[in-house]
Image 1 (cartoon, helix red, strand yellow):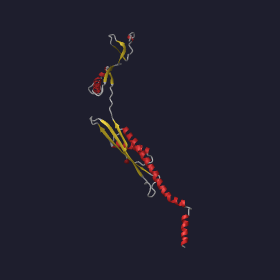
Image 2 (cartoon, one colour; image 1 turned 30 degrees about the horizontal axis):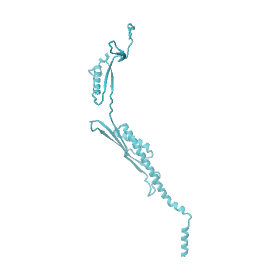
Image 3 (cartoon, one colour; image 1 turned 60 degrees about the vertical axis):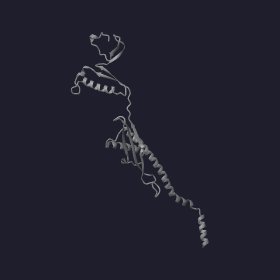
Image 4 (spheres, helix red, strand yellow; image 1 turned 90 degrees about the vertical axis):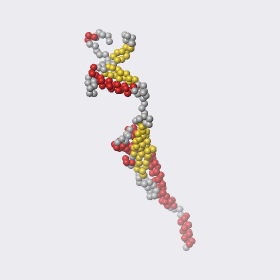
Length: 256
């Protein structure tokens, strides 16, 4: 009996039929678990990269609009704009507006009072992804996985700089008789109001010590003075009018 049992054991160990099937049946679940982790992991990493790209572009759009979260409506508008960008970049993700933030920091000059230097816009957000294969018992991802991108992925600084160039201003002003009429300002004629406006404008232009500006005043009633080629009778600059009306019949022979 003992010898028969030993021969049975030896024959069982030497049996090769079905060996591959048994091993495959044992390894198949493990292979599925491995590929689940590998495929879904790569997909989640790719989605996280797209989420970061969406934050970069979304916060840039917010900076271009220059919406500084002044009111609750402004904050909601910024969140909606950012949400639209993220929905485009990560279309297969579930993105809630409550999971998005847009922060705005206004930076003023430390040397000039009230001068705006820059505005910093930062954005962060979270998206929920559903793995394609999902969890396989103890191995794999949950049915929903959150991916995040912090403010390091979405930050823009909008810098403000005043560039001044020397400028020549030419003011063509009406000095005709109609300027003696009453203006829209009580107690002021049109010419008095014009004088006040021009004086204030010229003061602002010429008092700017950081740049050299010039102002010229060109009066006109029907036309404006223009410099003509040649000299006048006294040998000075010849000046004419930009508009010459038709003379009356008795002056038709005048050479003008």
